[in-house]
Length: 170
Length: 163
Image (cartoon, rainbow over all chains, first blue to last red; front, top):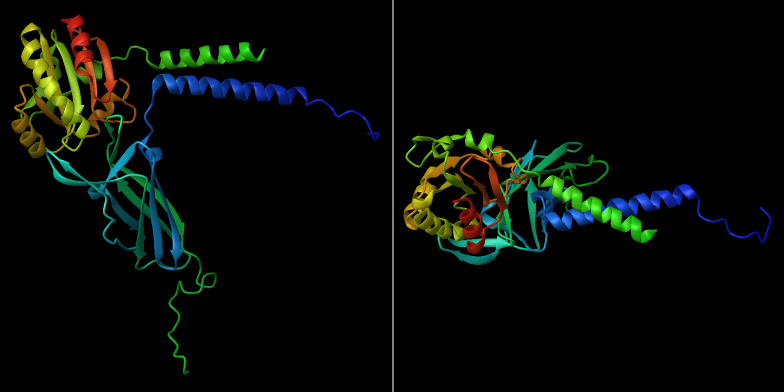
């Protein structure tokens, strides 16, 4: 290519791809708006979990705007490990005419779970059960979401195996 | 060219949404036989010939409980004209019984599991959300399905046309 030649126009195939993408996205948007579909529960109450310390898993529900979770319907289990679940944070209190005192979460809920017998190199599956509703007047069935957490080898993250306690005076 | 492509895509989207709302079939729903709060099995087919309003609900579903007084009223006022409301609760029988007494429920409350709710999926409740309501005409054809509470006026209009 000689210096000073005009820039080449975008290739025809690239333009076609752009057109198709535009058409498909418009179609989906139109269909979504007409149907006014509520979010599926795993998107309304998105669960995530990560290891933040050798034996501590941070579990999080990110709750979409207009949706809420019931505090007393949240359960965590781990396989193959034992979880110690602390008491969940307080939610917004609602006086339910049938159930009385009910607590709900909006926005996000974060809980630190303690793994008591996870071994280095293991794949731990954290299962989170939850149940919630949408402000548009729909309640979802209890839903279980799972996240797999790899426990690093002891050599990678010191402290997964408890190091022997040393005194400063040794 | 952009405008034409956009319009075509929009039309296709609307078509897709309408196609998705094609008239569903209530045969699986009408074939259900479920226990009531006393444990007696009740076949939904026993109400054939009536305008049937089937409401999936649960005591743990606030929006469900809030709309139910309207169903009680509709059953009282329109029952003599041929409306039959049937509640299918995805719940424990004791809770349903307690709530039915509190509300003075005047229509059957049947008990079901989430597996039973699979019949609601092809009727438009793919997420198994509650409340979900299906209105059938006297021939058992689906006249209306709704995820989420029904507005009282809407309920009267839909059922009124079928009675």
